[in-house]
Each structure stands twice: as structure tokens, then as C-alpha cells.
Length: 118
Length: 115
Image (cartoon, rainbow over all chains, first blue to last red; front, top):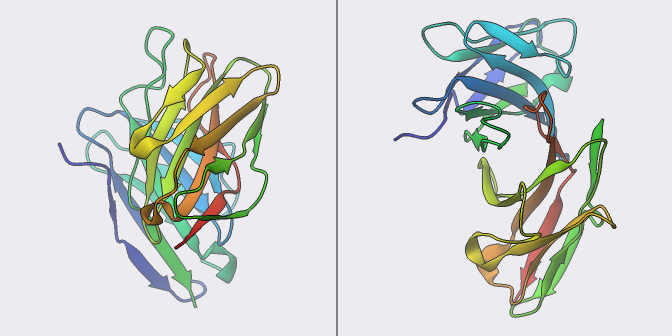
């Protein structure tokens, strides 16, 4: 069973371009989480999605950022008109469900996409 | 609301010495607590987790952590450091309620192991 896949692993964009980050969850996982890690900082929650639904986007900047998790295919984090401050590592995690019968299902993390904005 | 504070952004120990990485949390409901390790340019790997039950949790690579509710702490320890333990370590909390999903992470502690 392959782990969480993210691509590309490294992405370079110039200011004003668009960045698309892809995340394929582990097989059987229907919950996806995106986190951002700025240099020298911990991971900050951005958005939590289930198939075709955004459950919690409280950590997502209101402008230029969007996320989707379609019925078929990977989850996409899209950043429009990138700026230098968007340079960071973006991690995706997946879980089979958020909670099962009062328990907790572990989030499995992908290797991340390192975005550099020139 | 939930938050995590990791005391000490950098910890340096000698090989064979005790490792102690500190984590304090704040949560309005009983928490789930986690420690992750991150090697350079890689993703996060789960070391251990506390959900319910025994408060002393054993993880991979000889690490363990103890949940102390009275101190709102979940410190990570390892009796004897190995060179391969050099990495960044993150403590995280997830709320034990119906809105569970997102995790809140501390800012990380970089562990250096000296020969």
C-alpha cells in the first residue's frame, strides 16, 4: 500500500504565476488535510477536505488560495498569483476517517511539496 | 481552542545521553497528543501518540512520552541518544471531540546529537 503521494516535490514559480500542488491520499482514505510549514516554523493547518466537500478551511488565506478533493483524482491545493511569502513546504496528510467510534484515526503525511517563489 | 508550546527550539545532547524534549498543550476538551519526527527535506513520521488509556506511551526508535493531565504536558524522552536521532521533532494536539480533524503543531525542537 503506497503512502501519501505528493507532486511535484519541488516547484519553482515566479511572482504572479499559479501553483498547483497535488496530493493522492493513501488507498482507502477519504479525508485529506493540507498544512503549510514556513521556514523555521511548525506546520500550520490550512484546510480539511473529504471527497467533494470542504469540511474546515479556517486556516486557509481568504484570497488566492483554494483547495478541492474531487470524487475522482487527487486533492489539489491551488495558489493563484503567488508572492514570495508563499514560499514554504506544503504537506498533505490523509486518514481513513477523522473519528471512528470515539477513537482517532492517525493522519499519514506525504513527503511535501517545497514551493519557491522567485 | 487548542495550542502547543515546545520549550526550547534547539536541544543538544551527547551520544548516549538522555533526550528530553518538552511539550505543553492547551485544549478545552480531552486531547489526543502526538510526537512526530522530521528529517531534512522529508515529511513527518509519527513517533507515538496518546489517545486514551495508559498515560505512558512507547513509540518507535526507543522514544516514549508521558501524558500528565495535571501539568498539561506530554514530554518526549529517550534514555540514550543515538546519532541517527538528530532531526526536528514536533508535538501536536488534536481535539477529542466530534470536530476532530485538524492537528495543531508546536514550532518544533531541533535535536542535535554530539559524538
